[in-house]
Image (cartoon, rainbow, N blue to C red):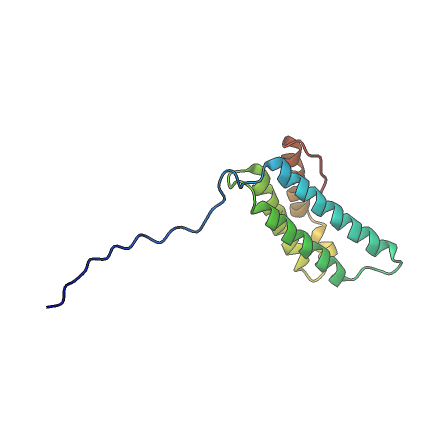
Length: 132
């Protein structure tokens, strides 16, 4: 008669989350967001300075890049951070504008401005001055 061996299986571990030591501080989040904002401004100034009318595709590329960067930055912060929440909100608004038929016009709306103001305020509380 075959013997049955009891096997114990441990529960599947939860996906790794950032340890407290791995979480980026609000100040570092804001410094990264400031770099993304500065890059966006440089790209916009270069586009406008080129002499030709910037295309919707260019605005889509700039806003999509901004969305991707702030979303990436937000993922490195603490889940209960006001800066992370503001980054996520701003990223969502940038994504909506990027996916619009006319991204430049879509970015010029109260929700996008409010998200930028919220992020600026959260970063100011963290000791970083940044304007979106």
